[in-house]
Every structure is written in structure tokens, then in C-alpha cells.
Amino acid sequence: MIFILNGPNLNLLGQRQPEIYGYETLDDVARACATHGAALGLEVDFRQSNHEGALVEMIHDARASAQGIIINAAAYTHTSVAILDALQAFDGPVIEVHISNIHRREAFRQHSYISARADAVIAGCGTQGYLLALDHLAVQLA
Ligand code: DQA
Image (cartoon, rainbow, N blue to C red; front, side, top):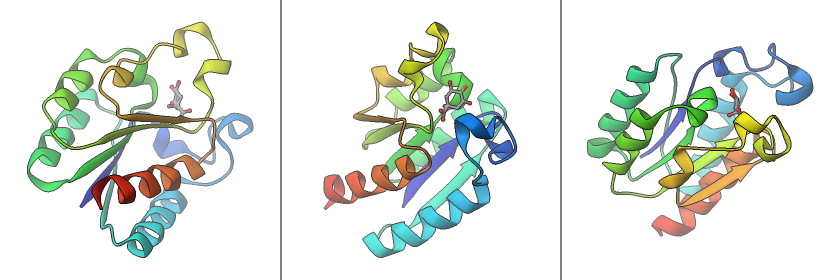
């Protein structure tokens, strides 16, 4: 089982700043991940929350249920020591994904707390980044 965790405002994907994040909805991304994961032999549990503590608890759930985590922590990427600490308590591979290239954007987006734990970071590939992360996990977990 792979947990794919999404942070705040990603529920508005497709409607929110489409010039940056595109027109696909989060449901579209969830469906694409389920299909791609199945082709790779990986079951996917795709979740989103706007709440930091809820994301921390999802990562705690992953300790018992997931072999790997793909996480787009959205704005919490740049603020959340709590999410970093939760990820530090997870033993499997962690892939950080951003739809946009955070390094080409505002200075405050260029620091990620998640990167201190992530085994790999994918940014700027659009929603394809989630599928690339699944490809990488399939190799890592083989
Ligand atoms: C994001 C980038 C973050 O800086 C931003 O707060 C998001 C989305 C991305 O996927 O590009 O909400 O994580």
C-alpha cells in the first residue's frame, strides 16, 4: 500500500490558479494514480486534508499500513515541523511532490521542511509528478 497525501487547498485543484496548477481536479489525479499504481502492482490510498494535524495522523496511519509515502504537503511544506517530525517516524521511502516548480517561485516557497526527510523530490512536472513518484517507488520497493 502506498499513501499519497495532499495538503491544504489541493482540494481546489483545477479551479485554483490553473495557470500554475493546471485544470485537472484532485479526483482526476486520484484516478490516474489508482490506475497507474495498479499497472505497477501498487495499491494506492489517496487522501487530502486542509488540516495540519490530520496530515500528521495520516502519516501515523502510514506507519502501520503503508510501504511508502508520496506527499504534496502544499503550503505546509514551507512551515510544518510537525509534518517533518511525523515523516521522521516513518521507516519507508518518502517522495515529496510539487505540481509547480517551487524553486522558480517566491522565495518563501524555496525552503521545504519535507525535503529534510524526503528520499526524492519531484517538482515542476505538473500532476505527472505523482505518477513519476509511483514509478520510482515501484523500483525502490521491488
Ligand atoms: C505546491 C507548491 C506550494 O508552494 C503551494 O503552497 C501549494 C502547492 C505544488 O504542488 O506546487 O499549495 O505544493
